Image (tube, rainbow, N blue to C red):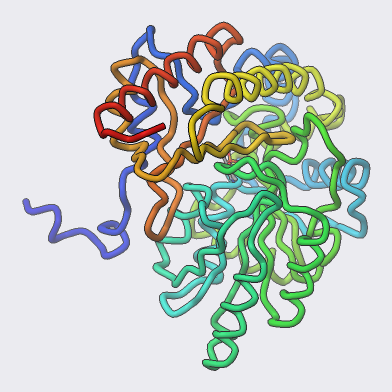
Length: 410
Ligand SMILES: Cc1ncc(COP(=O)(O)O)c(C=O)c1O
């Protein structure tokens, strides 16, 4: 059978994830700065195991049964308490929340709910790959807003919005997708003035703000900033997840937003999977009853902070003399973003990196338009400190070899 002829337009558009392919390289000698996955040794596995056993034995009528599409109300009530305590977010009830299979599903459902081919959505440049693939399924028009060190270039966005307004197309601009804290892949955090400006623009041009915040709790330094959601709850959809603060294997994500929007997203979810697994939701609920997720993550943050500081010190020491190199020193999260001088192509350089046994993610993976080929994402959360040291030496060797091969002066 000629499979191609059977495929839908959407399926033909879907490309295999570059990251997944790169990370499939399983070689024990390899040092990886690639994956953005948390360190499994930080998962509170004994506590989760105990709760899992209890909720299966004692609450099997719920945990082994279908649940409602909107999600487990006990989990929602617990999460509402957490948002009040740690995010100063008030006035929520269960209908403001939807429990999804990770934030990734929420991104997919947002695409289904709001985007058509003629729609516009604003995204950062570079963009989180998972959001790009989720939105791309709907084939919308992207407004790619460059990222600066304090978040999106809002002057650029404003000009684009004004252009759409003049053309009579502003109503087709559905939402702006923002990762407010410790951006994946770029590591940057949106400053307070820019958060206010986003709200101002959203009010002026009447669009939805999608604030994706999986990393906000992983702050190593600097001051915690108020969420965009807290500044404009009537037009913001906040995405949270258990993945980076408890365990990604539970696949628990949360949509927080205005009730009418949450209801619409929930309707799209019904067709996708009927409900998020009742078992993991109840495990999450009982976990939150007993433990404070944010306090629980503090020891992990200490480990990440040390690793981040080490990596950034080494970036400076080992790569700092390369003319024109730039990097982001993140205040939290899992990633730093490096821009090599013009002429570098980090995807092409990846062949040398493999020989040197060092993995990173070439920046090309994070663009929906023409990529900046000289960028790369490094993650510091998984490798040990020894591996980070050795890995940075290997990275420098890779860069030197590539520069020599290409005749680039560095
Ligand atoms: C910015 C961002 N959004 C969403 C996700 C998806 O997370 P999950 O589906 O595990 O909740 C990730 C995962 O890395 C991410 O970095």
